[in-house]
Every structure is written in structure tokens, then in C-alpha cells.
Image 1: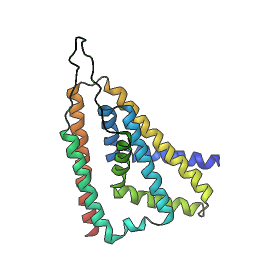
Image 2: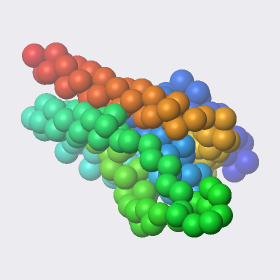
Image 3: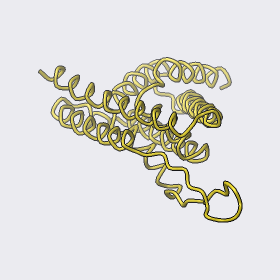
Image 4: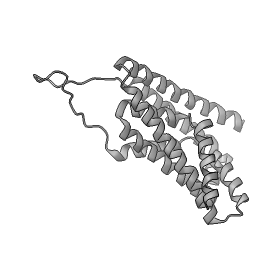
Length: 216
């Protein structure tokens, strides 16, 4: 059991290192800087829940519905459009520093932000609209399932280690971004919002072009 968990952790670290800088990464860091560490953790939980659902669906074979050639084109195009919309919203977001109108200097106003479940839903949705994530998990799950001959207990230990490691690294990225925030000015945060927005737009355009090329 322990060796399976270790192998899963190694795969999780590999994913976080070499495949952990997609649209979800930009959204995670931007949320940590703009909304705070707690909100970014909720976003990371949403991403984790999505990964877990995808692994389960892959094991059940339901993933074939998404990756079928007849559905792949429209799913890829719609996903790209959604990422572009996310990018445009992020790019145009303004950084506003609110200060209370009192005799006390620089007394901050506590502005009510989105509810906690909004960030979880955003993390889940941000990951689910990327068909490359689905295809990636199909390859991993098929390979690992073959290796363990479909043994459910071994698969649970392995993918449990993998998914929890990915969650931990996402939280680490959010924490690093949150600590960097103290050194950033409002102008710098605004620039990062634009960079994150451009990154999401580029990913969206790349996704649309790639699925069209693959179908043609």
C-alpha cells in the first residue's frame, strides 16, 4: 500500500511540475493575488474535485462520450470560447483600493466578495472545459489500470496519492502567490491580471485551433 501511494505521489509531482501551468494555474495565482489565499484554496479544491471526477469517469468508461470524434470538435471549440471569455474578464478586471472615509488613516473597508462555493465551482469548471485534461487522464488511467489489472484497492491508493499531491502543490502555488502580493503595487497586480487574461485567451485560441486541425 505504502509503495503505491509513493508512486502516486511521484506521478502527482510530475504532473505539477511539467503539466501544472495551464489555464487553471493562471486562474489559481490570479485568484490568490486578487481575492486572497483562502479563495485560492477553494479554487484548488474545485480543481481537485474535477480531477477526482475525471479519474472516476475514466475508470467507468464514461469518458468515451467526451473523447468521441463526433463530440470532440464541438466540445473543444466551446471550451476554447469559454476560456477566452474567462481571459477577457480577467484582462479587463480593475484593481481598486478602497479606504474607509473616517478619521483613521488607511482603515480598509471589508468588501463582500463571492461566496465560497463560487470559487469551488470556478475551479471545477475551469478544469472541466479543457479537453486536453480529459484526454490526459484517459491515457494515465488506462495505463495504470492495465498495470494493476483493474485492482480497485490498488487504484484507489495510487490515484489517491496522485490527486492529493496535485492538490497540495496547487495550494503551495496559491500560498506563494499570496506572499508575493505584499511586494506588489496595485499597478503591478493590474499588469499581472492582464498577463493572466492574455494567457487564458492564448490557451483558448490554441485549443480551438488544435481541435480543428486534429479533426481535419
